[in-house]
Image 1 (cartoon, rainbow, N blue to C red):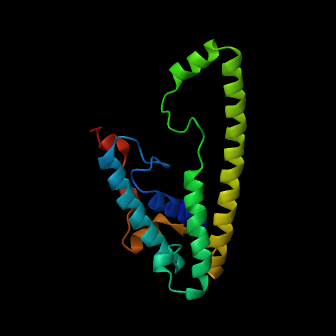
Image 2 (cartoon, helix red, strand yellow; image 1 turned 45 degrees about the vertical axis):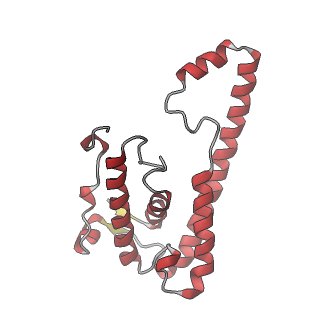
Length: 172
C-alpha cells in the first residue's frame, strides 16, 4: 500500500471523527469494530507523522509557526465532517422512497430539492478537501510530495496489514 499526504489527511479525518461518528469506514452499531478501527487509525496517523516528520494535529505540532494553519485545518476538518443531507442518517430508505413516490407532486418536490442539496454537499466536500490538501501541503513542506510504502511503515513498527475488518467483529 502507498501512503501520501492525502492518506495522512484521510487518516486525520478518521481520527478526528472518532469511532461513534459513522464517518468513512466506521460502522453504525458495531462498537467493537469501530474502537479497533479507531485505534488502528491512531497508530497509522502516528506512523505517517513519523515518516512525514510533522503532524497535522495542532496538539502535536512542534513548529509554532504552523499552528494557526493547523487551527484552520482542524476547523475545516470538523466542518467537512458535519456536512450532511436530510438523507444522511438513513441506512435503508426504501420505504421512505416508496412513500414519497406514492405522494406524487410532494414526493417529486422532495426528490428535486434533495438532489440539489446532494449536489451542494458534493461541491462543499470537494472544496473542504481542497482546503485540507492545500494546508497539509504547506505544513508538510519539503515532504509534501513524499510517498511511503507499507514496508516503510513496518520498518518503523506499524503493520498496516493488521487493519481491522468488520467481518471479524460480529454485531453486538
